[in-house]
Amino acid sequence: MSANYISPISMEAISSLCGELDKNNSINKSDYERYHVKRGLRNEDGTGVMAGLTRICSVEGYYILDGERVAKDGKLSYRGYDINQIISSCINENRFGFEEVIWLLLFGDLPNADQLASLQEVLSVCRTLPDDFIEDQILKHPSKDIMNKMARSIMCLYSYDEDPDDISVANVLRQSLQLIAQLPTIMNTAYQVKRRAFYNKSMYLHPINKNQTTAQYILNQIRSDKKFTDEEAKLLDIMLMLHAEHGGGNNSTFSTRVLTSSGTDTYSAIAAGIGSLKGPRHGGANISVSRMMNDIIANVSDPTDEGQIKDYLYKILKKEAGDGMGLIYGMGHAVYTVSDPRAVILKRSARELAYKAGYEKEFRTLETVEKVTPDLLREFKGTNDEICANVDLYSGLVYKVLRIPEDLYTPLFASARIAGWCAHRLEELTTNGKIIRPAYKSVSRKREYVTLDKRQ
Ligand code: COA
Image 1 (cartoon, rainbow, N blue to C red):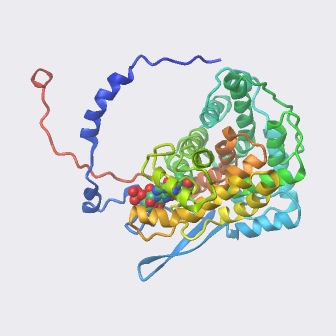
Image 2: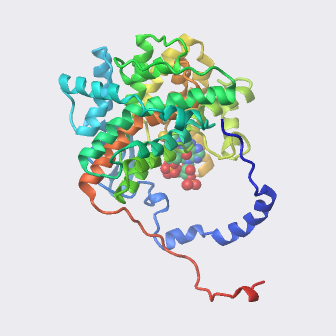
Image 3: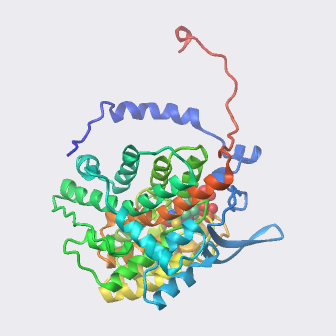
């Protein structure tokens, strides 16, 4: 077990330096306009700066008419196939679909039955980690944060690869398939270690059942009795399909593409994706929604009363409540305006499941957040923007119904999104061929160097 490290640097000493740091790092907001800098790589109308071309995914939330952004219902397609069709076909045929999505994203077209079976086989064989990896790299150094542990474990796998730096398509494809299969194993092992080290609970590492789909495998590993229903596994499978990919511009995929463009190894590029996804403005929002929901329920006498929720959300925006970030989690999106198709699909499942499982209050709280936030945010920001619920608003509730612990919400997102990261890494390697390297305009004034003896 790793002990807590007490930093020799006192927070008091550091705090006194922060004023200095703030003073020398301030940048006038007006300078962004003056120098035509696209803050957050965004154009003035909020649309993203076009940074690349992709065949993997299309994310649509508006269209441009006479140079103006016009809001429209969100649309998501993987390799040209509408996500709604992919999911409804799996539901109608009562079969699992995440593996089909992995194939579609990596290779560009729907797999036939033989191709799908061969992918299943490869994933099953690759679920196992190298000899002693669990003992040496995961058990010995428990982490409070599973995402951090996943990124670290991916970096460690570099040392077990006989050919880690070869970035030929064949080698990167081999590494990608291995990592897609191994990430759920790493996730579960890291979680089990956390249970024992930080919650004083039993740790269970079940043998790997090679005849399971990814969703079945995950439920099998995280439940102490290995028991789950087919309905539960198919629901988790839908969650994995919905989270598998979201275009080249989302923060974690773009991070993966940025690192890939430098020619670095697969392990470094995928670890970067995990590090990015952890952030509460990105994948980490699913945990933040869950905490925000509990906070609202604890602080509002009637969580279905629109007025009370609105007042509490206003406090959150003013940073007087919640985690102090001023964000209403689960709401808003860089591309989607009127609706996020993933949230629409999830809300349908969440409503039915929540009512059945006794989480009606939680569902109605989130639904009220969804209803009152757009007007509230427009009032608060003084804008006219359309804003909708995003994928994270209802995903935590679905996981809660599946009895999945909060620790695993964002790691599950990563276990699905790794398929998209790998597809984009392969696309970056095969198509772009240029290092991604935007520019920063310096707004420092020129200064004469002062020797140490003359400084105040
Ligand atoms: N709560 C508070 N403020 C929000 C917000 C929210 N849910 N959604 C947007 N805003 C703010 C933005 O921070 C931005 O403020 P700024 O002009 O001071 O920078 C402004 O409204 C306009 O935002 P917009 O351009 O529409 O979105 P964005 O691309 O800057 O932000 C998100 C997109 C997703 C980061 C943002 O909506 C957010 O932080 N949401 C909450 C976190 C979340 O659920 N993330 C999961 C995304 S799938």
